Length: 268
Image (cartoon, rainbow, N blue to C red; front, side):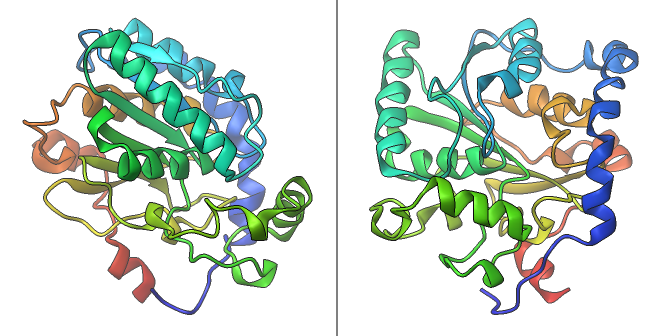
């Protein structure tokens, strides 16, 4: 991994103000979204981002429910950051959902929630079908110096104040397995105009079951972005055994720009 770090450009950070307006694009997009592939009751566990709760993923979960998926909130209140006690609760919840449905669970994580999703996929792959992350900085190195991370300083300070024992937490100080591609099909959705987390830390090394998909939009708007909604519905409809890349279809290549690979991203 490269030693140089990138912060989102100031313009991208200012463009986060467009997030509420992005929500208004959902309604005119519904005729297209209604044509997106549907599910057949497959379970989907959704993780919120830093300092947000299940209410932040409500629109996304409602859309997926209407598309035929059985959605579940993470039930941990606000996401205060990476903590081992929260991870342990999530592993119990994941197994419970698996047993209730009799099938593996799809994991969808927004921002920091995606780091939890990837960690679960590594530590409990027997319960996980696929992983989809939305603007998740899983490629960040394991560093605690605020000058060495690719997110705005105020957010880093807030994170540290909420997690005073961060240097002793076994999850954070253990092996950062979330940096590695999950052992199940995974999709990393990101935006180059993300104003919270540099997109370079939200992409993976592309492989036969790992892909990156680039969308247009803000970081805060990823949970109600029409492009993201379509991708979620289409990707979740893929079976674990029959999974194929999103850009395999010609019309996907026409609508969505070619995505970056992790190694290419660090070359910029």
